Length: 392
Ligand code: NAD
Ligand code: MG
Image 1: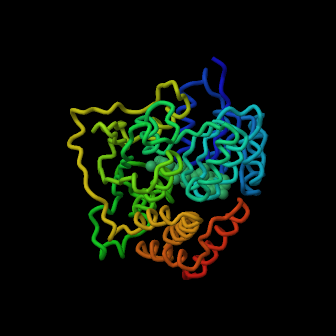
Image 2: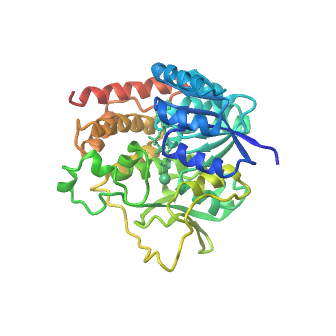
Image 3: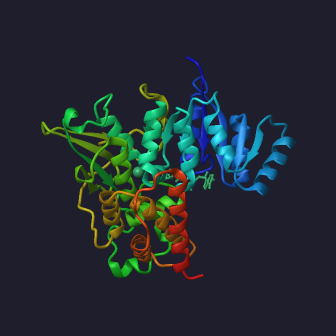
């Protein structure tokens, strides 16, 4: 087997480190071409010493000079690049076989789209790319013949439960609907009154998954599930009406496909992202991943309930934006990113997140942008609008 070269965007994050765990288990199969992150020098330095990539990329200039110095002192051959353009360079280089897209937020869009245009195999964790630019992105994938493999656990489960070679024709495949499972997050039992007083720390204590802070808040507000509904729409060519969400607090069933004949196919496993990462890396084969086996005899009951859209209006907002089409999802995402950052900084309360998003939607032009620059200008305008409403 020839060794596959991988670029990891967002290497220092939760998905990035889990990816490198899988890579480290299979040195005969994978080698790291480039590791990219925003500014976490020490972590990226340690990763460079272990994985010996050809390139390391940092966005922050001071962080990049520090990394350059540290690597030179350690006698490393890794070259340090700096800035956004370098993200696209290491994602499109001809030697690269696959790109793990694990930058958080719309910041991941440009390099992930560049990898799509270059026809790479894309392991997609950065769901915001599809939420912001689903149309453009899927068009680029089709034009270039890129291979798009979902890493998000729900979509990875759906991908596994759909027929092999599924081409987006639900009726031909006998599919009735996609059922996304949601853990319900840390505030599943909170009343609206209690939700008024929750803090960033409370939101980041997820019951089943250890994740970055932004996606942890999204999980707590159910916006993460909303983003995933939109992600499923683009990945599997499925209209909003055929996507259902069910709260399943144990996160053992990662999602399901309901077929016309009454069958429901599900993918189950321990809640550990290294399973979907390994699946996406090796597809259509399977490789070992360093995860705990699921034990049916000790795991207890699996339960299901309906999501509460009154307490968690972000999920409804996402469904509405998907149905509205145009750039509604992009505006929603931009507003959400600013609102979540403001909540994490302690500047707004948890319940203000959906309020700010709704307000941004009602103040923005939601017609479909014709190209990426136009779309990114709209994203920037929505961010500026919401930033202006947040107390300093
Ligand atoms: P994280 O916050 O742990 O890591 C984010 C990574 O992105 C870091 O390496 C950071 O340096 C990098 N980054 C941030 N801003 C950047 C920028 N402007 N330019 C370049 N790099 C930048 O986040 P995470 O939890 O690993 O999530 C990453 C993505 O994967 C998100 O889109 C998230 O929705 C998705 N995802 C995560 C999980 C999970 O379990 N963590 C599950 C499913 C999907
Ligand atoms: Mg998910």
